[in-house]
Image (cartoon, rainbow, N blue to C red; front, side, top):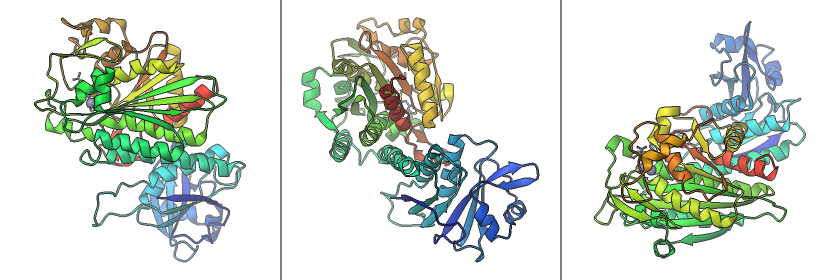
Length: 497
Ligand code: BES
Ligand code: MN
Ligand code: ZN
């Protein structure tokens, strides 16, 4: 696991394998950014000239590599483009792209604007977090080959007041994201519902969270028909995990609910092969809730937080639920299961109703819920829905501050009608073809306890990167929503949400 520490050594003499500096676009060509000054001196003031000769422009994310040829102690210089007027997220991405490009290089020093003289603690946190997230790699199932291991040691050249606390916060947030990525990347052969509940137990033990796990028998006996119904087709039985973090000065309770389908084959409403091969990511919501709670326990905001992980494997078999089955969700409402591939909303319904027993001031659920999220918003932007306009906008704002892309979406009242069932209280799919993400949100809304504010995050696309890595985001599990959930807990603690 990559370590990060603060350092005040000059870039020219620091004993590492590579140094990272920033480049900004300017009229005259690429301009070395703040933080690169002492490197520039070591190169006789010719850093800009060297970068220009190598074709650097300073555009965001651009990586330019220069051999140091003895001018400084490190053998390699990496200049990362910052773009014009970079935001905190631009800086996180630049740091991430630079460190990611250095896989195979054990020791790296990073000096980016903000970490240099004059920078703030927030800048230091952005660079540290981006660097740590960019150093991620999932190698648990490799036994050799050409694969380069991630950067081992990052030294951040920074002097701002509060820099040490900023780096510590970055370590905590990166740890939460890493946990989510690892869980999402772990193949379903190695992460059954029982295994995922076991991971929650391990995390709870490490961070002092209270935990309670309901097994398949307790779920059936307790009336959790949604989780039991989805899980009944698999030889790997379902679980409901309840985690809780309490703070002595808390005046509010936040409940987080995560969809934890360890593999979504679709069930008897089987998915086609090309839609199935990434369905190990279908527990990304539950992983985000677990990752966030581990971060919250370490950061200690003054709020009570309960987390539910609604975990099952959705498989076709002789014991699987059938399209047209009716199940009874926790609390008694009946659902006609017309499509067994709309399973996320079934497991979430149990957990949402159960969340009502925790006297919540706010419930936030996170789920890889619909393909329609990808159609509407693409692969990187989370859809945010809520039963309250102000809550929705505040959640979108919290996500933005945490550095995650999201967009507020409506829950139009007319969509409810399409979910009417001929035999039960509600059907799990709609006769209405359009607006699938909003239909799913509309279904969930029916199970939110009366009078409780609620927001729903659809992370179907954002949880898993099928494309090439970018910024600090690797291929595969991204860690989506973990940082947003931590930010939400902090905003509730601060009384702004
Ligand atoms: N897990 C899927 C949604 C999903 C799709 C997540 C793509 C990540 C990437 C979910 O359980 C599902 O199958 N949803 C169906 C719902 C439909 C049957 C109403 C969908 O979106 O097709
Ligand atoms: Mn499904
Ligand atoms: Zn699913």
